[in-house]
Image (tube, rainbow, N blue to C red):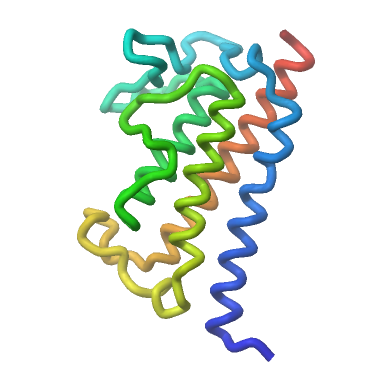
Length: 177
């Protein structure tokens, strides 16, 4: 019989693996048109700039927050969430991008998401049960006293809800655009 510690670490791993699974489905469903589709205004997206592509962003989120495109949501998951977390956990992200930098095609975006996920997932799943209940530390500001398990579950929530939104936008684009 598995120990409680083994059960906890295995549960975290399986939960994270399950949360990431919809990315594979997107590889066959997400088109270039749907990736940048703006279903309503105002809409935040990623736009070409002199230095590549960049996500729309302001420091103080507007209220109400604008609708976001699939492109913007992939940036948010990859750079704003996963790479940001990994940078504080292991000193590097998976995409090699920072700030609002992103890419203009779904193939590039999904590849970068996988790279960001691989670094984050490797960090989280290397933890023991004792690590999962230890504090995040000073790099996490006001969240520093929270257990590392909270970060794993927060990232899981971010991935699940944004991938669900992306899937819905793909469905809407397929049936309406």
